[in-house]
Length: 565
Image (tube, rainbow, N blue to C red; front, side, top):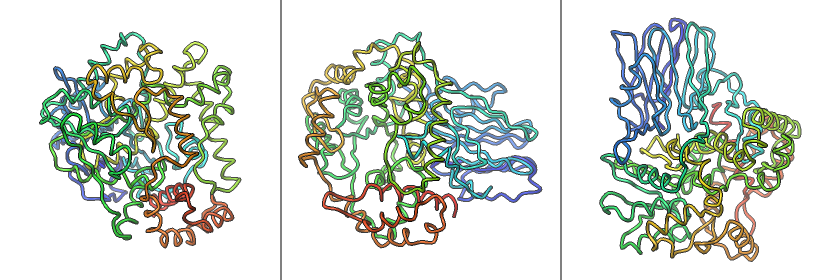
């Protein structure tokens, strides 16, 4: 990942060294700052004579003619060299730090895809974009109340850091001067004045898949969202774009993606590999567990470990991430079963409808603390978000998803990918999202908007089925039909099954046994030792596959160890 690390305060009383090799650095009597990682997603400029510098991590997008351009160091300087900094017109995901006049200013994208952590120290502030580097400033303690929604619900629903004594700056700006920190929220706001027509949406997407002087590389699956993006590429010069699919070539995603390109007389690249050696596999999952910040089980790395194979190319990667927001596919259970609870602002019932089982490993005391924290975060959101009675329940759920899922569920993966390549998700860019609440409801139901545009752009792409999870469904299936068909196929055992996950856990069996039996587990007050022993007894596999609770247990435990050791 592209990263920023440093200290602002009295440098005479601290010794701050970069935890990794830095590309850029600056130091004076008040500031030590290092930045590094991918030189395509890290930018820096210093002005020693003025005791000033700035650094940016991430990807900034600026409209340019019929497309966009990616901001380089000169582009960022045009914004950050000004006395009054205004970055509202910049799309993308980024964290910017500027130092001048003995003051630190911090800016993050309002969508919440990049963040930075601040720690108050005796003589100043430590700051880092990497959560695992907080240990260089303080002893790490997890705040179970803040962590609760991240574990018990689909995702964390606050913008706070769940490490004690740490301030997370996300969808906000901050200023530090004379040992005083001031934070101002800069949350994405709904726009009810934009036209919101299908034509406006169509034009906005066309621009987002066209970047000046860059080749487009689409991460293609068998799903609806990436297929819509493909429909905007197929009529362009084939030399300007390409596609790839990560993972098992026999998975329905890979097969449908390949067939889509074959229909266009083109080739889709399947990027897969055998499992690495145990030593490398263990290192891989440890790194992934820390970087994913308990948003995914560790086995997710099986399909997410190939971005390094795309390094060094003059292209940018796009994917269909968060396209579900345009089809009202987030928090449907809450919308369908919890409408009354939303209108009554019943935090407890809303919380129950958002629960997502991961692994039963914690003590009753820990669970109780997490449940209190999750309910409290929902209560805070009910006060912060517009009243569902006036705003509408469906709109409330959409805004809730944008405000909570992007900064907490999508952000870690975007940050992780930044270490390899330039990438972004077109469907979450501000110029597109501003149209969201003005698209007619009937077009957002059952993916009608996307299906209509796909047929308009390339009728051939509508003649192949879609993939959801491990199952294939007709192109025109309704949301209900997809769910019903999936349940039937799962019940009958006729969905696609890969042996990769089973092989993955078999390879890790000895390592898992060592983790479960370790003193780190025995001495952790969060765990219920009886539950851990039960998990260990069923350490691997039944006939249907691996144990998903074990998958999530490793996600938490390896993260916990990674941020403390």
